[in-house]
Amino acid sequence: SQHLAEVDPEVAAAIDAELHRQRDTLEMIASENFAPLGVLEAHGSVLTNKYAEGYPGKRYYGGCEHVDVVEDLARERVKALFGAEHANVQPHSGAQANAAAMAAVLKPGDTILGLDLAHGGHLTHGMKINFSGRLYDVAAYHVDRETGLVDMAEVERLAHERKPSLVIAGWSAYPRQLDFAEFRRIADEVGAKLLVDMAHFAGLVAAGLHPSPVPHADLVTTTTHKTLGGPRGGVVLCKQELAKKVDSAVFPGQQGGPLEHVVAAKAVAFKIAASAEFAERQKRVLEGATVLADRLAQADCAEAGVKVATGGTDVHLVLVDLVGSALNGQQAEDRLHDIGITVNRNAVPFDPRPPMVTSGLRIGTPALATRGFTGEDFAEVADVIATALTAGPELDDEAAAALRGRVAALTARHPLYPELG
Ligand code: PLP
Image (tube, helix red, strand yellow):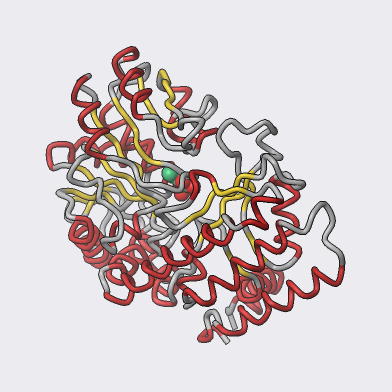
């Protein structure tokens, strides 16, 4: 037989172990999710065999009649989902979607204005050794030290001082909504284009639970694997007038052959994201994040120096500020890992510690909501996290075992991928 388990038992065993890790732990990395079975099936299909440089109806290879169907479905579905005029579904990742979106409207040396990485921005929004920082002249805005909210007065001031060709709104670690109309107003004042990178909150937008950037922005990029819950990949949405520039920036500008198996999986994910079940799931995502923020704002946490950045959340994640706690970000991440909860340490704005250590955690609810977690389950998760983070410098064995038991009860309540045996 040619099945994986026989052809390559080592890889098969690692995949199996990963399935069990996902099942037996609480996955709370804010950028992760569990792709539904239909998405996994499309992804693991014979479409991976096909070269299809170009776009539906205009390919550089023969035999594209079926992948054309798939890519057209993906494009039409994502346009309908977000009310966009044009969509390119080929970017292999969020980073490549951003690279293409920028290349479509910028020349090397042009100025971009984005949120500082250390304040919740993404690498591709102008970090020094990322393509964005190497190709473009970067101006970065920040959050306000007191409120933790994006400082729109600074955005406006920098826009006038630095005259960017592109303003970027969007984030990887920020627990609040942005004012897209205000970003648009500022971009217009200085003649800049506006790119909104909605990678993190696209699923909330699709469900109508977060304002849409699409009416305001010239370009909107997203990943498809975070709140959207699809395969790993990227998308660029734009106004019709930029369609040609975006398409040629993706191919041949950034990429060769598209990953049509991934495009197929994206199409499936977009169909699911338009469903009532998906919207109901996103409601639980938000409910879970609010329940977590509320628990981490209680007195025991405050006394232990565990704080919620900005005082709460309007999205799928909570940014935990550990500047005054006995644990730094690394220690807190390790402690939660040790009891079966997977999160990532994350710098908080004005973090006194280096980026490999940090003084924060980013904790997200999308994956657990996909697993079926309800508000009641999230209350238990939140209490486990609060108990672990307030236990002081050492967590004794008995306390750790009790917390592991509570995690095991939660994972047992919501089986993951029962179809996979
Ligand atoms: N944009 C934002 C806001 C992100 O948070 C991320 C990933 O974390 C990306 C883009 C990049 O996505 P990818 O990892 O697929 O390149």
